Length: 524
Ligand SMILES: [Zn+2]
Image (cartoon, rainbow, N blue to C red):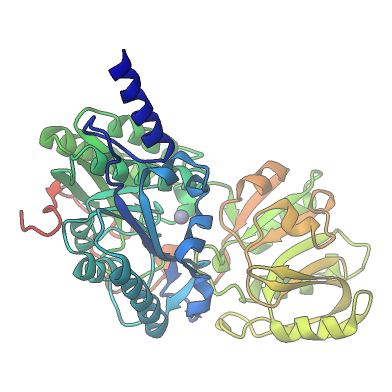
């Protein structure tokens, strides 16, 4: 009893200090050393916009913990390893990242990794749809260069957005691999936490790298607006992922939709399953891939779609409000430049909105730093006169003329920095210093706008994010021009794999057998 009690005391001491003890012997066991690194962006190669380093809002060292609620000081996970955060950057979607920005962020990450090694593990937190000017497969390149620093004894666990792309190289360099299972990505944090938990489990149990990684490219390329997991067939397809991952001998399972607005050979859907049981891993992957292929014809837009003209006619005729119109072609959260003026130009020209007491319409949004400056000079209640937008993407319409009353000026948003609202006729136009997505009710109400009371709300977005979706009493996605045109058939692809569904109508059933990716650092 005494001995037992002594053992208990030691166990208690060890566990309350956050240390693990696997030997049963007195004395603290060594905590695993786990680095954290990653860059996240989806960037369109069909947009003339470029993304620079500051867009990543990179966090360095201990600041990185703030990106993860499950890594707060009180969290149990935090105590289970010696965490060595390096650099984690996350940008709004945009145009391709400049080579300078990419090299700078990669170099900072590698320098930081060199300082604190060796590592038992690395949590690699990426989106997976980064395009870099003049470089294919940036995430594969990044991890290969990280491996040159950390070596191959380190276990790498990668978490991704399901709109990311998984090249063979990325699959080979990583050991554990997963992605979101929901679109919209309500499970983003849960996914990241799973990647970290699985990494810890494999290190602490001594199981190490899973023996098998099944990788299956599925030649399908679809926009996110057709593949939401809120509706069929995305819903049922993604509901198969978790049960697949829970089978004996399997560590994780994932389906990537891929990213449609970049023109690279890696852009396509992928299924991956990792684990220690070869038959279970390959069979689960093949089943998911087959089922994905089997429902390909059923994917359709998540909401009714139409020309802007049709959307407006429906919205104006609707007795219910707010009626939402997604201005999809320039969706900044898919990679649009965000400053395409085509839709706003059409709206401002409509006779219905010319008078101040016409049907109220909120337009979110158009970035233009100069117009914001002018609005600040005019002040709230003042008259502003100028042009906005089309500084980056002027392919579809020139800068739009805005002459109206400033109804609000708000500073301090992380993305927009300064936001102003200009009322032109019955349209409230949100103009931002830098581009910003409008996804939440508070994004509007903090500017003094009342979206619930508006007749029409037009947002540069694809599918509505949860809060807007809950608010809408009517919703149509307008198929408008821009860097993320939803009409993929109109995009000038040259480098994606062919044949590819839905571009090649009569393509034969592809080979969907599992390809086993060699364990990282080996050729088998
Ligand atoms: Zn996504």
